[in-house]
Length: 630
Image 1: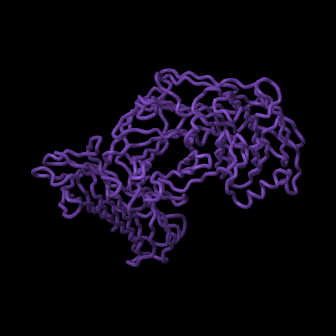
Image 2: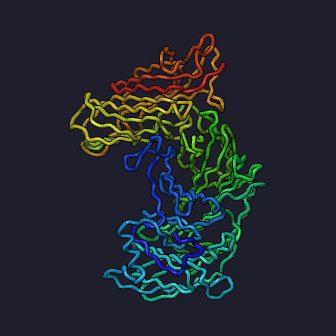
Image 3: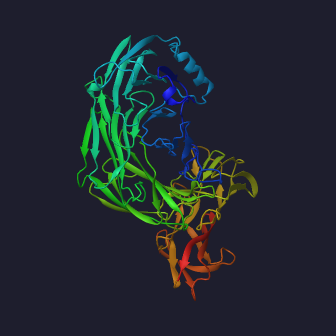
């Protein structure tokens, strides 16, 4: 690739298909039949459900499982680089500020052809085209070549970039467009950056627009938290007026030198929402944003317009306070954690993964009200080659918080095991079956995946093996009619984790061809809620009281629990002893485990067998479910 300082910056580029620095999701923790799903991985795959792409610049782009959130880590020596993130339809593009918008990267044939046609103004087909001329004025009011413009089609799949000149001309079909212009010295990460947005251009003839940087005003925020520093700043706009949503944001590591302005309509624009988001944290003694005792996460929205400047001071009581405990599964491991914000009109935002020691605690101060927050937590370890890799990854569903409210959360608490997130884990449509189960979820219902040594799923119909998979999900076509199905999910990970080193579940259910709609298979899981310390250790002093719940697959038709047995082992499953199980009301039970003379081993393993009144059953084994101590 040509070095940025040597590359000419006069260019024009059209993207019709996925091209450029595009990233797409590959894995997800929340399993559902309509999604690409993966609950655990082989040693060569990421455990956390996020797709990572390393750009030619060395910058790393991480995309969340749902595709709505992006985290960008600048490459070595590129700290302070600003990025533009584009989410248009199925496209995900990340554009480093110091590179032209026509990067030399592999692209599908259709997109390559479109790039060639663009310079000649082609691509309008049988449709009538018009010229949209954009004039770039700098912060001194004079024409400037230090400008780049992006045009987004709201009525069709059009995305064009042009820059390096005081005037840019786009030849476009008739329709509605959003225009975004940046004015800056793109080779200098400390230069002022002026972003101008014209949210709605109706192109029914040749038109001219002036994008004038003198109209911009500063963007700044005071988080109201002494001692914190910015970890991430994002200024974005989402336009839902067209056939596909378009979301474009500017990401930086602080507010210095950022200016914004709207150009064009003075009346509110339907379907338009802008936002200013920021993440704040404390630096440690080395100056790193590591182990922060407090973080602040802000997401403020503007309906119908893009802000011309922005100035906010967060007042006491504006935010919610969430006190969080991070537990440890394996000594020597650390963790990273990210929070994802969304709000009415804003389907996704950027995020940053902050590192923590384990165990640890922190307080998250969160934008309250209609803003929704979810989190991703990964316990990681340093591999032999010095790289850091996630072992266990946990995620939460989005939720909102009340201003001034105080909340508590706990992450990574044992027992780590299977969990139902919703009614989509085993679904039969006609004679087609889909199955996927998060096998490494924590005690507090954070759905989870893990790096594994081995993982397999096998499906039997009336005793015959009909399908198997080495991933976290399985699809199969069954023989028509009523039959007995047996699903076996087995995973092991002793080489990377100390707890839940082997998890096995075997479900046996009756199922018939589904005449219409979908049927959720009547699966069961047993979930344990022991009282553990931050190292996931249970004190064993003669009698362990182990709370547990029995849970049926949501929205499934199942019988009542008819039999439940729990067995325990202190020698990694070599021998088992029956525990006494008593009812506590509803789906709750208590297993009473006697350990006369103290525990015989460092860990307690658990095996449960459940049968309901319809004959559905599960046998579930978790080796090294918790640590034991005297």
